Length: 359
Ligand code: NAD
Image (tube, rainbow, N blue to C red; front, top):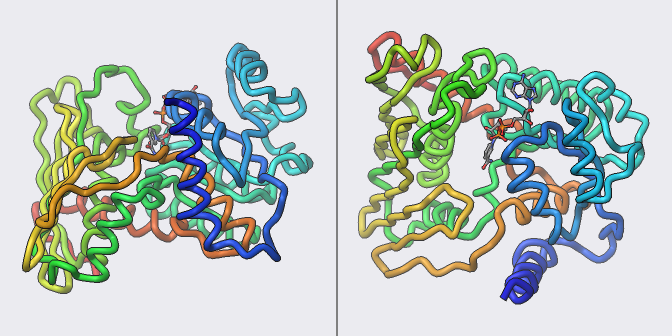
C-alpha cells in the first residue's frame, strides 16, 4: 500500500505538476540542496519526510541550536557534518556549494532575520507562513532577496495541491457564475500555553498570525480578488492567559471589488477548519480545507474527487522545479505580503472599531 501510494505520488508529481512544464533542454539533473533552518515540529514531522519523494530537491543540510538534534538528523538523513550549522555560524553557508535553498521554519518573529541572512549568503529562500510579524519586515525581506538576485517563496503548501487549485480554477473559470460569498475559518485548541506562539515578540499575534492567514489567503484565492475593506472583532474569554498582543478568537469580514463579501473566524479555542464559497449558481464546501490532508469537499455538482497527495512534497518540488527552470515563483514574497497587509488591517479594525479601507 505504502509503495503504491509512493509510486502514485511520484507519477502524479511528474505528470501533473512537473513534466508538462519542464522542457528537456533546460532540465537540470542536479537536485537542489535544501537546508532546513529550525528543526521543530513542522520541519521534523512534515518537511523532512517530504524529501523521500522529491524529484527536484534533496535534504542537504540542517541549522539547529540543539546539538543533540543534529546528531539524530545526521544519522537519520545521512547529512554530512559540513552541512550542519547552528544559528551563530549559519552565515558560513555562503561558502557551501551543496546548499542551494534555505528553508526558514523558525518561530514567526525570527523569519525576518534568517531570510535576510540567507539572501546575503546568496541562497534561494523559502520562508514559512506567516512570512513575518509586520509589513515593514515583509517588505525588507522581499527587497533583500531582490537585491541578492535570489528567489523568495512563502511555504503556502495549499497552492500546490489539487483541491485548492480547483477552488482557484472556479474563481477564474466561473463554472457556477460570480462569487457572492466566502466563509473561511481556521482554528485549533492551543494546548501548550508556554509555547512561542503565546509570546508576541516571537509570534506576532495569536491564531490570526498562526492559522488565520490561511483564511485570509483562502478568501483571496476563492474570489481571485483583493479585498477593499475589513471590519473585525476580537473576543477573549481568558484574558488571564491571552495577554496583550495575543488574541484568543477573532472574527472579521471583508468586501471585494466585485461585490462579494466574506466572513472569517480564527481561534485558539476550538478545532475549526472550513471553506465555503457561494456562487450565483451553486456552492463549494470544504472541510477539512487547510490541513495536510486528505482534504474533503463537495460542490453543487457533487463530491470533489482529487488524488491524495503529500502537500509538502508537491510544494518543495513545485518551488524547486520553478527555480531550476527559471520560472516565476508561484507563491512569492509578494503573495505573503498581500496577506500581511490584510492581517494588519484586521488588527487595526479591532483596535479602532471602524471599517478599514485597503485600497
Ligand atoms: P516549533 O515550536 O515546533 O519549532 C520551532 C523551532 O524553532 C524549534 O526547533 C525551536 O528549537 C526553534 N527555535 C529557535 N529559536 C527559538 C526561540 N527563540 N524560541 C522558540 N523556538 C526557537 O514550531 P513549528 O510548529 O514547527 O512552526 C515553525 C514555523 O512553521 C512557524 O512559522 C509556523 O507558522 C510554521 N508552520 C507552518 C505549517 C504549514 O502547514 N505551512 C505548519 C506548522 C507550522
